[in-house]
Amino acid sequence: MSPAESAPALPLQGIRVVEFTHMVMGPTCGLVLADLGAEVIKVEPPGGDATRRLLGSGAGFFPLFNRNKQSLVLDLQRPEGREVALRLATTADVVSENFKPGTMKKLGLDYPALRRLNERLVYVSHKGFLPGPYDHRTALDEVVQMMGGLAYMTGRPGDPLRAGSSVNDIMGGLFGAIGAMAALMQRAHTGRGQEVQSALFENNVFLVAQHMMQFAVTGQPAAPMPARISAWAVYDVFTVQGGEQIFLAVVSDGQWKVFCAAFGFLDLQTDARLATNNDRVRARDWLMPVLRERLRHHSAAELSAVFEREGLPFAPITRPEQLFDDPHLQATGGLAPVTLPDGRPTQAPLLPLTLDGARPGVRLQPPRAGQHTREILAGLGYGPDEVQALLAGDTPVAGGPG
Image 1 (cartoon, helix red, strand yellow):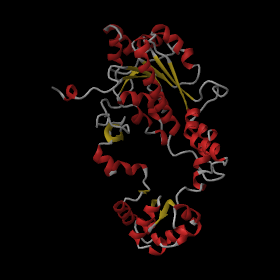
Image 2 (cartoon, rainbow, N blue to C red):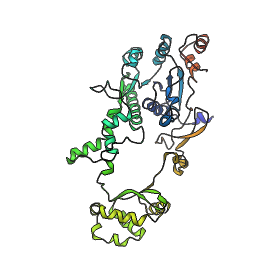
Image 3 (cartoon, one colour):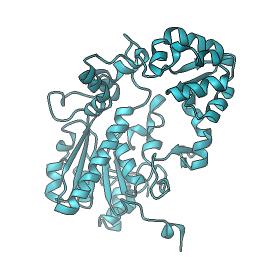
Image 4 (cartoon, rainbow, N blue to C red):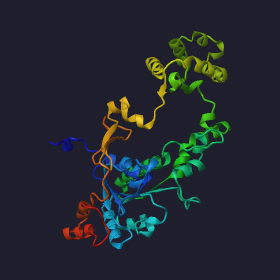
């Protein structure tokens, strides 16, 4: 028995997903479904998804969000290309898209059109806004972070700052995948599919809901995170020996005793002004400069060793590129080998979950544009001559060698 035959079936094995997506949000949805075992066919335009060619902060988008997928290149501006897409949709359990409102309708690939061909279809639309007054606007992650309160909460007062990741695009794709799986479960009972919508703005509002509810409960607006009054006295970044930085936290009265004993701060441990956590919060103005001065002579490694030994919360200030060498990720298999479009090997993080003790892994490398066009067309019933004509460009709807 081969390893593939002996491997346990993944939860979504047997589910076919066809995605008309680009950038991050839609591809994230497909990534989740693909990693969980679905067959995901990525439909790309001639020349391939433009996401493949992004530079700067977008350079990693394609190889990260498109593993475990097949690539089919179609020219959806041509009738022949749309015919292939329609035929493909009749075989799909899920269709996913993240284009501007109205784009899929113009192509005849919107939910009402596809539902007539396949009543069991689950159709996932990833948008900037759910239907309403804003749904005509063009949305980006940074746009909704600014209008949805997240940039205000992340930056310092008067200096709104976007979060350091495409949080709404990624999380919006996750909610699209959750919606798709929920709709598939419901289809098992009703026999019918449905449309699922996920949106950047509403996702962002969900992220800041804790601060909305803080206001509802207390009547006081939430301060930006850098200016907030922390619930814990010691919960901050310290600059230590050699200019290194480390985050240290002491969040309970028990931890305060352990912390003071570990570093010999008996004067602080016995100071009546610091008896409880709330006392220490009120004393932060004078307590924190004292702690910063006493700890700055230690190295980050020394502080890490003490905090780990004593079970106290701590964290090195880590740059993203350093995570490739993180011992925990390396030891637990959290990084999987992938091949970049130019053929170089690297590693990428897997989904942050386990199924029966195992991380869903990489079955297919991020595909070359049109890599699977020939076999997908054949699977849709196109004969050898038709496939060859399409690939040769006689009918310019498909591209790329098989």
